[in-house]
Length: 469
Picture 1 (cartoon, one colour):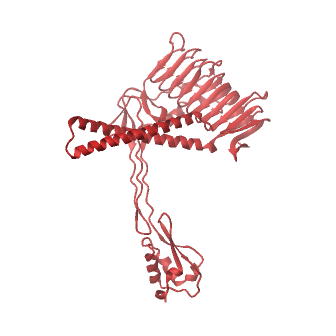
Picture 2 (tube, rainbow, N blue to C red):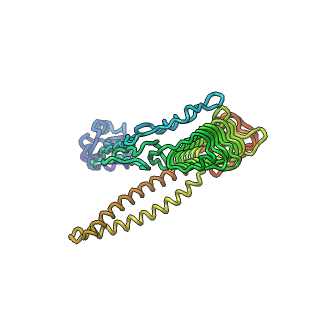
Picture 3 (cartoon, helix red, strand yellow):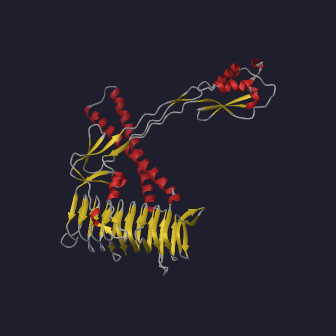
């Protein structure tokens, strides 16, 4: 009978690597095999499977072993641990929606409704800007072997504090320290900037503008003048060969006629109706509603030119991820270069971050060693007043350095992920792509010889492929 059998010569119990399931499998199909349900239960438990047993299945195997000779059968299931949800920062109003709302409204003929552009969201001193939503705790599970499986707690959200904002004592809410405009700058720092307005052109009357905040120009920016801002720059008019540089976004209701002079550089987005003989650099997206003529554009993410004309002719357009246009090039085969999937500035930043991380880790190590010595003195009651002050200072340094290390590692991970994502790089043409166009995706190049319509260029199997758009 079953007790006389050496079950291990007939049966093998396998526990999954995550310890959340166990399986029974026969080593050989022996027609003479028989076993009582109780003996089979004992055998399973002797193999370490003690939790989540499916007794009905074990009893069925004992009663009719032949039906299970050739299959692996699930006999136990554990309880998987529940991972906690990450905390996050909840803004008092949706910044992304506001940015979308400030885009000039385009009519069917390609014109722009200027009334919709100059809408500035102001916040008052003491107004709540953002709140921290706490992470939730994980719930532990249990393996089929009876072990506790810890659930990971969610990661707490962290405020990225910029200028003119204050935290409450509990570090759970962020408030405006001044009246002004709420803006997110590089690395999503939250700021409140005051607004500087010019009612007219930027010319010899106003001179150059260098302002820690948002600048609104109700006129044109003339050749040779310069605007520098920490917030956003909005021009209710046009721009000539001027220099406009900001950590936020640039929005121009008219266009840029630069004559190969000056440049526009934004930490986030640039939006305008047209650009001719200009240089534009944006950290995120450049949106042009009419045309890009003989210009040099660089965008961290996308260049979008899909208005009524949506035309790109001449020059070089570079984007980290995507270029979208209605028409690229012209019937005269004017040389036009479109490059996507390349972010050289990111590679430089990655190198700097890695060097900085090594220095921070080294600094933290020295701080911890010094604290270790002071802790020993404290235990033996030999801590003088100046040493006690040094200990407090070193603890603050340790916290600050640890936060910087965490931020660095987070940014390094973000950049490495972006550099790997060449599969998102593409060039989309809604109408016509003319001959004379050069398409570059990452390290691969394709010259367009004959004009083609409704086409998308993507990287497939190591070459720039053309697929239907």
